[in-house]
Length: 112
Image (cartoon, rainbow, N blue to C red; front, side, top):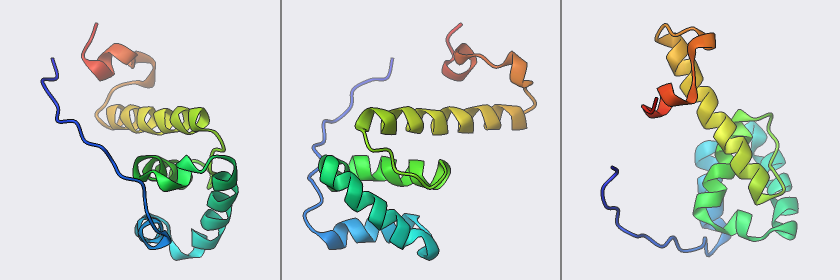
């Protein structure tokens, strides 16, 4: 149904400048210090979360949409990202005139 996709391997961020550039593009200046402090704590417990471009991108999205907190575990990061995406979908449907009570997973995916 989705067709074929090319396989791409993301290389880890290999220096702080790359990481800092991603952060500066997505976090307002007044929140950068707090974010980088939280990221440093997270990196000590789970280094991959701060060196993977994909995971750092998820962290940045969750941080800006979810109370300015970085999840300490990958599973919590994924769970919060799903909440962000589903909330956006629900809000879009409400803006289109759907009632909240009428929304179901099938209406988002096209499945019945």
